[in-house]
Amino acid sequence: MDCSKQIHSVPYTSCSLQNKIHKQLKQTNEHTQQTLTVVTHDGSQYVNVDTTTQNGIKHAKELHLASSGLADVAMTSYLYDAATLFTNNDNTVHGKCFTLLRHPIKRAVSLFYYLKVSTWEMDYNSIFKDMSLEEYARSKWCEENWMVRFLTNEMK
Image (cartoon, rainbow, N blue to C red; front, side):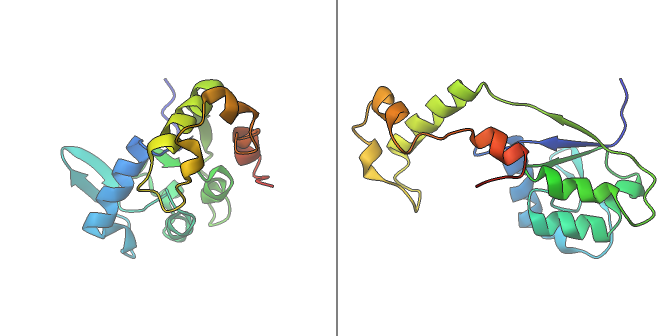
């Protein structure tokens, strides 16, 4: 297996490993340092940058993450921003991109059931509470090509 530098994109990450790592970095405040270091947490090693946010990607680029040799994988939902890690800065490392995608229908159904119960969310809408899956699928609230728009960086 080729272990070249890679970007892992997780466009739908409400309950993902990416969020867990993001929270751990925020707790330690390591991601704001001005030098790259390897941080060990619960037996796993991470580089002290946060590629789960656009500002974090910018910071990682400023610290030359791609050419540092410290990271083999950067996880992010921001594919186009993360691609900039491999440009400029006299970087000679070429990135590879891979992604893990849920089946779009399974993801949409999961989102529907989440919307029905997510009363803790600031944008919770009680309209979903008694709505059937079929009603949701035919409604204006059902997503339309969200994944395609996200991956092509054309959210509108």
